[in-house]
Length: 78
Image (cartoon, rainbow, N blue to C red; front, side, top):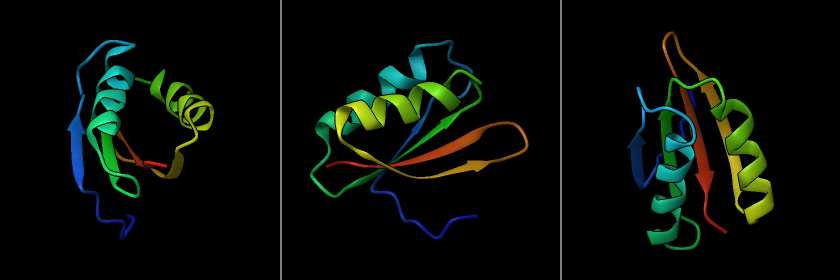
């Protein structure tokens, strides 16, 4: 478990691709620079979509936690 404290959590568990990524992008758009958004997703496609998008968009993927039934992605807005 990480000790990163997110400013916002987006719970996209149960959403089909590309829903989790779209939810994350919306949250990042409304966040302030330096804010951390946590995305909860049980969609395996997020494991590739989120890191690729974060790099392309210039945001930083701080951590990915693999949990029993989902993954938690911590993204810091640039």
